[in-house]
Image (cartoon, rainbow, N blue to C red; front, top):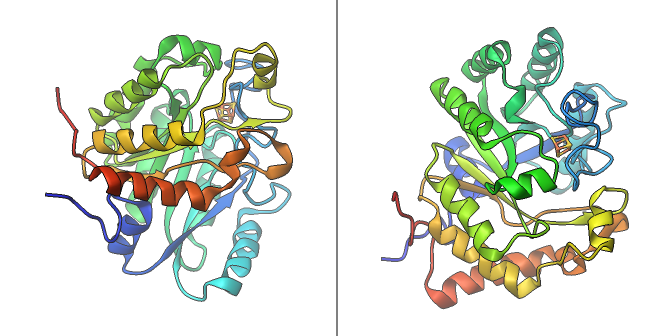
Length: 310
Ligand code: SF4
């Protein structure tokens, strides 16, 4: 029988958070002023080839301000539109476990103490989760609901090298295991449309993730942005954009492969219009989301329909 999560055929973040906290929960994206080992030379200098100047935090608050000030400013803006709700303080830009422990603890606690905060989300790399950091995350997880986001993007080794991700699958799997041992929820980022990937490579990434103990997934459409190293590949003809129809079909197939408990945090990406080189159809976010709903309905597909443990 067809499964539904509220009015959706997939377990959406909105549905999950409403159920967990009993009201609407908004994310507040922060830039805590951290760096990234894949940019500062520790792992590499170039960074992941799709990563923007702002360390994939293009819609986050400004690092010129404290966590409290960023939180307050964004919350005030949101309150003009939505009067009621709780908040997830989202450490989004750069690598948010890449700093001395004292500084990390102060910033996480500062975020957790803001009025209305129901939880914290921390985006990081699997190779920045040493024992000390894991212990700190465990400590935070006992105070406030926490999830940790890991940017895997793909399970294909050759693509990981091409995009200069800078760590291997073993490192990723160990990080997932270590977080699981500490009862910390893990959300994984994937990107569809990476250079030199076929559709089946993207589907294989989802199949791979469906067998790991993760609690959430973010699907991103690859955006090519001005100023990123990937522009060069595009100019060399090594990057072809997915069409809107291709992407929608791929996402719907991916949804059917996930177990029902995995929360889908995102079905497409965002990028600032002024930096976007393509695909330009990605700017029609509502149209994409509606088309995904329609495609699922027309095929009578839903999350977990083709999930397999084999
Ligand atoms: S790990 Fe994150 S912040 Fe660092 S280069 Fe890659 S995408 Fe950018």
